[in-house]
Image (cartoon, rainbow, N blue to C red; front, side, top):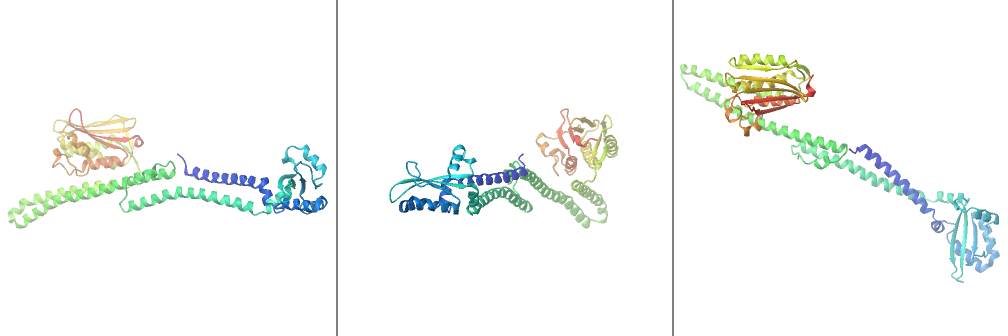
Length: 441
């Protein structure tokens, strides 16, 4: 993954390297002979003035002018004709000429040698002018000129501005997209694939977008499930309330001796309503903060559930197959609620004479607890819908409110596990809780 930190660092270093490189190139360009001849204030137009003075006033006057010019500007000048012979003596001493001849590398000389050709417009003669400028004088002129610092500053500003703009846009555009996604999520108008392109970025912003996308999908799913749950709750509550209203209306119109027969029906409807509300509250409590994890001893928990099942259905036989003393780290109430609902569901459909089998199996991936009955099972096309709130298969009509498996599934998911519901190959129905290894003590 390309870290945003390294991207910012690389951008800054690249910008600095470009500024330094372009400044060096600018320095080399400003140090070329042609540029110096055309921009140095002392050398501008000097060739024309010297040739004109030589042709009008002769070599002696020109020599005196060169000596005076050497004293004032500290620049040695030679003037040669088209055959390479000096037309005036010049100011370059013979010893310096011999020193220059011995050093083939001009960079090691204490002066800069510049040459300029000039053709006289009057006589048509061609001349070669040789200037020798000491490097301190040349450097002083470079430092005093505003062109070099202004050009270097302009290069730095342009390069840094372009790189800063690119870096800023690469950060602010994704943040702006995330801000709009947060706004859409707050308005419940979030599109699940709105951050798909941003999530493909291989940096911290891409990881953030991917996490936010999953969070948005999860929240939308929760909002949708809550809305569906409210619709289902209102539908399920409407039936017992309607029956209570009818029973009360009949009781108001009935004779005193007839009312006695209606009281059990009213009590039965109240019990059904109370049981439904208790299951709805149990389902809602699963989304609350469960608190700190605790050590769960699986064998004693199953023994307690077996005793409760014996009181609920004394005619049924519950068999527990649990080797060793398996333990989990989690929330005992949550695991007990899940197993209790699965066991009650199995007892409801298990025929007499056949046992309800509870099996605990330790696996590499964690712990598996299965509850099997020998009932009619569920049609294959309805298996995927099992565990949805208020869903009841056609052969389960009238058996509960369709919340038992939903409570069990939600509890197992809060524990970080998975609930598999399927028909057993040998007949009946089997529900398996798969708890991850992280929960094993």
